[in-house]
Structure formats: C-alpha cells, structure tokens
Length: 177
Image (cartoon, rainbow, N blue to C red; front, side, top):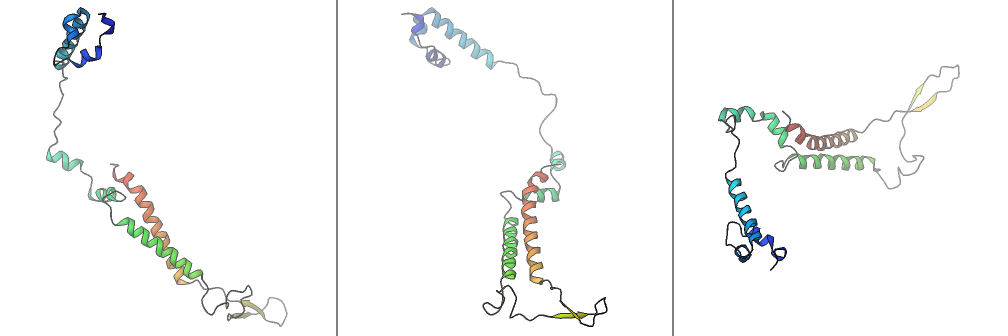
C-alpha cells in the first residue's frame, strides 16, 4: 500500500498508546510515529522558567490589598449581592411618579376645574394702587402657591433617579483603587 493512503491522524492519536498497524509495515509511518514520540518526550522535559520571587500572599499582603470598608460597600452596590438599593430606587421613583400624577389631577366636583375659564373656582384678588392717576383699582390674581405634595413628589423622583445613577456608576468606582 502507498504511504499517501495511510491515516496520519490515527498515527498521531496513537502516540502514547497502542501502536497502529501501518507503523510496523510502512517506514514513513514509523518515522512519523517516532518523531511524534520524541516531540512528546521533549515537551514533557521542557524547561520551566525560574520565578524571581515567591507569589503566595501573606495575611499582611491580603489585608493591605483588601479595599477599604466604604469602597467594599460602594463596590457591592449594583451587583448581584446588592438586594437593597434597587427596591429603594424603584419605590422612590414609583412614589414620585404617583405623587406627580395625583397632584396634576383635578380635585373636587366633576367638571368644576375642567373648563378653560376656571369658573367654579374661588379666585382671590389683591388690589394695588396704579402708578398713574386713575382711581380704578387694578385686579391682579394672587400668585399660585406651590403644592407641598408636588415638591415632595419631585424630591422622591429625584432621589429614585439618583439611586439608579449610583447603582450604575458604583461598580466602576468600587474596583478603582
């Protein structure tokens, strides 16, 4: 049989195991098998570089390399171990949005505040003396007083957004030393 028809992968697979039949009958296959066994023996006895120093960590090294307490806490925010900040962020953002929706809804009898003129709402006017010599008093509506619930809702919404932002940024900052 011709050497070109022999399975060279079977010969390579047999290195270190049972010798296949073509190795004994074909001189080229025998030479290939001998070369692969020599390569295998050379790799096993290959030189390993000497290490210039010892690599095991001592307890003092581990304590020195361990992040500070606040960095450990900051590094835990936004990771798999963090089970506190995500619910806080969701609750603050949800309550803030709900409060904003509730403060923008009209309160009172149906239709009392829905028309564009505002009929049905009591209006408070302040009178002031005009700068010119007219005796008529000018009627100016009183400035609208901000609703405290709106401010509280905006604060909750901003707080929830801030916690989400911290969750996003903290894992990058926690690993920096």
